[in-house]
Length: 130
Image 1 (cartoon, helix red, strand yellow):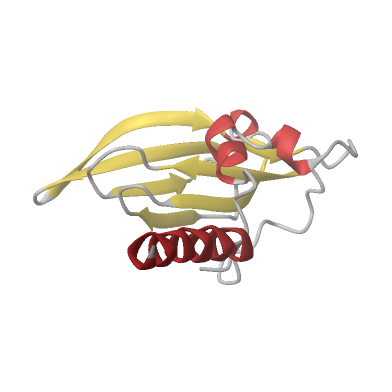
Image 2: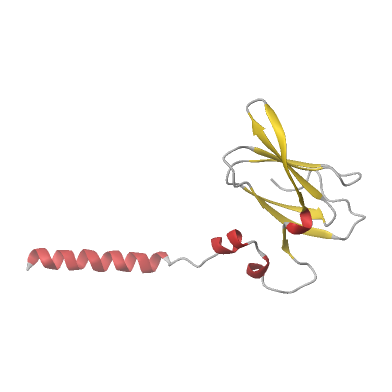
């Protein structure tokens, strides 16, 4: 979901692009409530990656859902979740958290996989004929 409904307050230019991953098997609520005139809250499903914009002084509260309740399980400063340094022109892969950088590993192209399958099929056909 885009951050259209509750954008970062325009008076502060110190914005960070942040990423939080729910590595648990429970639904979580991510909430920022320590910034005046701004409130941010999202549901984060197990395994989901939440990318959002926040100010450096913001604190992300993680509430873990259990049956009919939610428990405050963690409070993380948003500057520790930063995935992009706006003042640095370093590559995005260097600034991503390790798990996000690993997800960007180049995978073999479909053409390569198809040619390997075709070669295997041809060699099996020749083996049955000869």
